[in-house]
Image 1 (cartoon, rainbow, N blue to C red):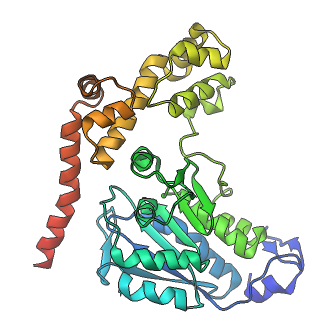
Image 2: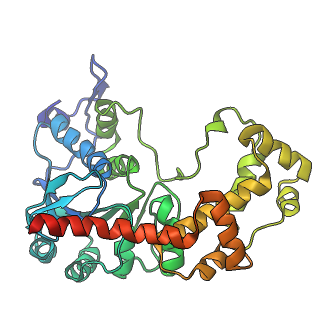
Length: 366
């Protein structure tokens, strides 16, 4: 389908099932929209490609370069993704960002990050990002780029999301943002998503706002996707047993446990809240998860603890309290039984992973 066909205005599916436009189809005849892509060390290539694929397909369907993008990095040369591949990013943040608020062509700023986020967002970005937000230029944070926005002070009283592995640490570190475990969010011109394949869902939502649902249906079809998930989908809401569990009590129990990590609920209280007996609660966990409610709850708390150990510098005793343990000693004992190492050993391993790429980069630059 060409752009001219899209704007001519007849509505009916074509012979091959593609959508043909009509007079009710939203059409934007503005000049090409520029998207500034800011890449951060260790970014996810899956997140980046998932986000850009719908825009590439939109250009193909419209028969013109409706969207174009350029890549920027701190070095102005390239940035290395989590797979170890170097992505050309020939512009520096300091070159690109100050010009964006003055340019009418840049319609979106997209920040792509992943993995462990080091403290200290690039100083040259903070002012320009906040100015973009004030001038209603959408800012998109993919993966742990949400962390960088929070460090810039751009998420005060703003709904946002981040990958579930970083969510506990994010909540403990920042008080201003209203974090949710949705796959993506949009609030006041600031969009965020968990990264990976959820970047595709966010891109579809943004394209639908710009070009309408008929085009995005065709985009999904060309990407061999049945459709895009909306923002009501939770990152942690899918379980293998969902397909055959007919009771709503088990997911209800798990939601209660997830909400009450710092102050764990007695199993009797969980059962009473769900209006079932403790024995029925135990039977549900045994049938569908092959474990007991106590062991499952303990694992949730320890998983949260591991996230905090890996992603923050909080003292171990504070991590223990945040996960509902009465002492650091008890937390460390349970942690070692679950993961085969102590919290301190996990933290040392995390520091090694953070510094190794830097050492390798310095060696290559010699």
